[in-house]
Length: 428
Image 1 (cartoon, rainbow, N blue to C red):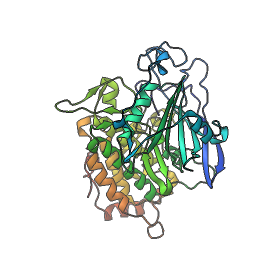
Image 2: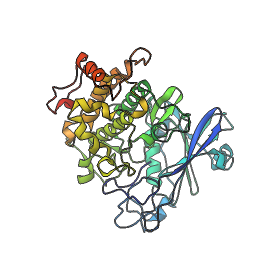
Image 3: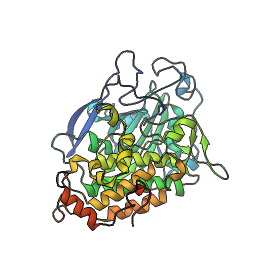
Image 4: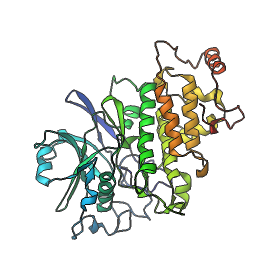
């Protein structure tokens, strides 16, 4: 879960994390061993950005919210009301720390799945029910604390949606803060797009649209159906988890905020999130709106389509920022094919590519009022996900074959009129 201010430049001194692959229960998983930044760096885990009023997590008197670090584990007991203990119609369980020690065999290395801003995540086996779960343990020296723990519990305890990860329970015993979730067998979307293990097949076009549509439905639930409505504030590929059949679910809600209500148009708050996903208007003003999430969703959709990271310092300067790289290409539909992930090897429907890129382009508009509401995005992506592409029937799009791609463009009704504003309209 990202918890760092999302404005400012990336820290190029941070090394890319290394991966280890291991096999368990007929599934492959990747464990990310977080690389340490070079001496003099910010001390943040991989690919994060921080500007904490001149202080880093390893050298600061207070955390990212300006609280004294001792308040990660306050003496006062954190209370959770029964009204917040509902998850999918069932009361969230209160686990004892000994139960979670047993579930993970004392947090054995073999059970380690990954690490984020909150802390380490382990695969566990609950002895009482036999259920396989994911257990997230708060790192007292990390960048998040009790506040994020409480927000996560409160948000997920009130949520009940097929595209939001299910909170099974929590543990707040002594200095320990742990969250217990349903186990998502296929890991994160980030794993499949950018960190695939050897010989793993890339996600095909149909699966990518299924994931995009499911993530949009999860965001729609937060924005339009939860009471009060919630601004996610941390939408990114690593927070989209995948279950069997690549069913996507949003996870990590420690940065979530209750959205504006009544006559209010925004929530004023400290700028938090992950660099590359933050809306520029939010990063500059601290005014958080539902359209801030829409921008982040547009970045994720671009990552799904292009196979490129939101920020990638291994590329040339002009290509390091995904949105900045894509904007000139949005203006000329003849260049749209250049944005398709090379891993697709041309196996995608050209018309659907245009439509998906049109959606992404609208979401990452610089002016927030120009971004579409989430309900329109869901409608458009549900439609694209329903169009099943069959590579056995439709020939692949080859970048070297101008005549083939030109014929496809002439045969299809395309969004826009080629005047540079063609990505501002959805195509039916």
